[in-house]
Image 1 (cartoon, rainbow, N blue to C red):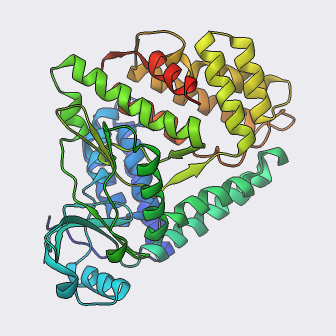
Image 2: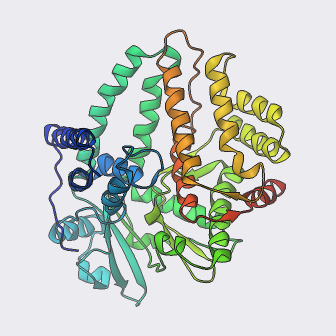
Image 3: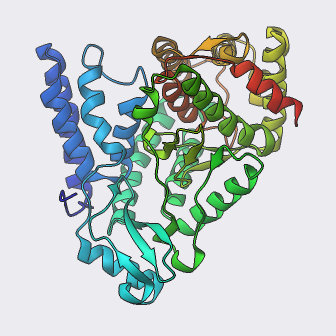
Length: 424
């Protein structure tokens, strides 16, 4: 990987690049072409920016319903590079980060260290290395300047949040929403926290030999460096193209197990489910990577989630509605009807079996959220604030469902979910 770029951190440079993405996208839509040129330009600009901009591009590349109608395939192909192949930072600056963070020379820390990164993404890049005892490891190092870049993006977003807060009903609590989102992004900059979360997720799934979470080496980790066991496997695209339907079914059912075991048992979920975070194995195992963005639900909402799953499994819409209303604290009216109806639709995979996750279904869910936003900005609506710990749930839902849709297979999500609920 020789695509090295210095990271722009100034507000004008970053805002100007985002504006150029929007302009190119708009011109491509007016031209009614396939958008390939604009898409490639958007991927290049967002990749150079890294940080939040690249994360938005990553999400747009795989979540069905997010891309311009009629040009979705072109944008998906171009933006897919942002999942693991954004421009990397020059190695001398990466070496400096490692040695400063770990307090020793690269040569004394590692027996081998590949200067060419395995992958580069929005926050950092990953290098293959070997510890002095011979253990093969993956070393994730933050892009120099990424903290300043994200703070610049968050300052820009704060202005947007203030504008929304001034226009929308007070109950939307735009400032509180912004604060929670900003907190999650800032947490992703602390690899010590990610190491703790990765270890905690490994403990949560320790009973399940099908789930592999790489071991963390605390001795070689710090705030901006994270060293873990080196994991290998096939990519999501390769797994989804497997001609063995039974294996594809096993993969999606295990993905469901991983996500909802965390949610139902501990109210935690990895809110960044993009395709580069999974490695698949021929024996049906899956390796899960990247625990930088983790959300924790409040106890009251988690209790409501348990009730919603039980009601959906029973096919009891009224019980589901009551549980959702209790968990979300909604007021009667059009917004509540739209929101609770949307949630019932989200639970469709466990209301009947088998269920084939399809891209059109996910796109419909995305449109449902877009319609809910109309209520959120309408004066006099009965909108209620989003409970703490739930802000990123839609990101998980749409991203995760889009991942499952890639496998194009009927699965017994209902049976998997029932087993998880019965073991609470």
